[in-house]
Image 1 (cartoon, helix red, strand yellow):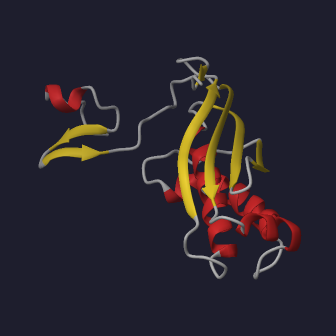
Image 2 (image 1 turned 120 degrees about the horizontal axis):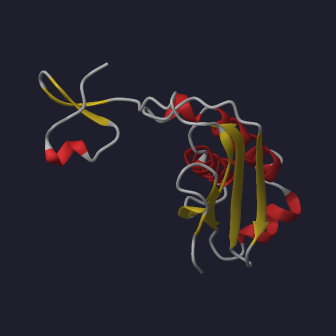
Length: 170
């Protein structure tokens, strides 16, 4: 284990320590923390060019059942977050739910909720799940239009842990 940084710039950064050659990234040791129930919900918005979404929802996409494949991709991605994001702890998730709903004639909302009992939060798992589900929606429909956009990947709410509950306003 490296010793804690004395540099004022890096001393407030939880994932940075002062190494022999300067600041070094590290995965924070959470072994001293108590396990608590943790939950987080994130969303991504996918916008389709005018008139495209209605046909996709009615007939499916060129690669098959668009919504179900995206849902499965989101669950799988949330489970792999510790491998995808370098300083995230690998978590044993107790549950992941991905919902995809139509907001209006051109937009879908992807909601991903991740749940676990653990020592660190599941915000990144929820955000990764929502992001990858949105990317999968793009991949499943890109043959119909390259003008599809992914917007507003964001955390909506989290609970558990030392900092307690948080909810996005609005």
